[in-house]
Image (cartoon, rainbow, N blue to C red; front, side, top):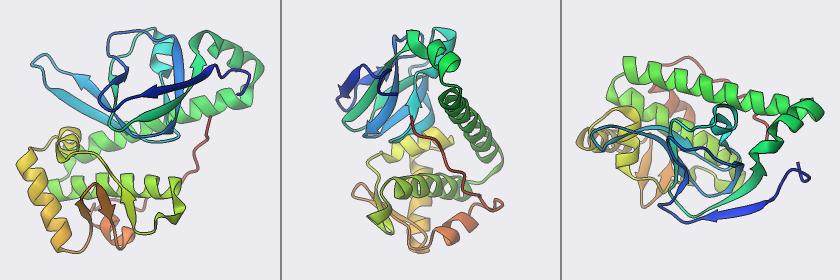
Length: 216
C-alpha cells in the first residue's frame, strides 16, 4: 500500500472530498476526521446516505464507474491517504489479498445501506434514532477504545434527521426521549451511551454481530 500511496490530502470542514456527477483521479482512505455521504436532490435538499469515519475507503464508485452518484463532504477537518485511480487495476492483478479487502469494504457498504433502508422504511422514529446512534457509537469506540462510554460526535441533529427521513423537530424530541430514559445523551458534540446493549435493544432488531473490517 505504501508503493501505491501518493501523499495525503487535507480537507477543511465544509469542503467536498468528492462531488456527485464528477469523476475523481484519486481514491482515499480516511486517516482522521468525519464526513457525510449525501445525494443532492432537485429541490436543493439532500438525502444523507452515510456517515464517513476514520478507516473508510472513498472513491471506489468513481474508480469503477468514472462518476460519483453522491458527494462526500467533510464535517470536520479531514486527513486523507491518497491512491491514484489508475493503479486500482494493478492492485487487483498483483495484490489479490488487498483487492479482496476492497471488495469486502464495498460489500459492507452495500449491507449497511440495505439495513438502513429497512430501518427507515419499517421502524418508528425512536427505533431509527437508536439504531443510528448505536452504529455510530460502536464504530467510533472501536476507533478510540479508550473513549469509554463517551465518543466525540460533531455532527448536527439536521444531519441525523436527513439520514433517517425525519423532521428536525421529531429528531430533537426523539433524542430528548432517549436521554430521559438514560439510553443515550448527545450534546455538546459528544455522545454518551451508558449501556450499548440497552440502546440496541431499543431498535427492536436481532443481535448485531461484530465483523472486523479491513484497513487499507
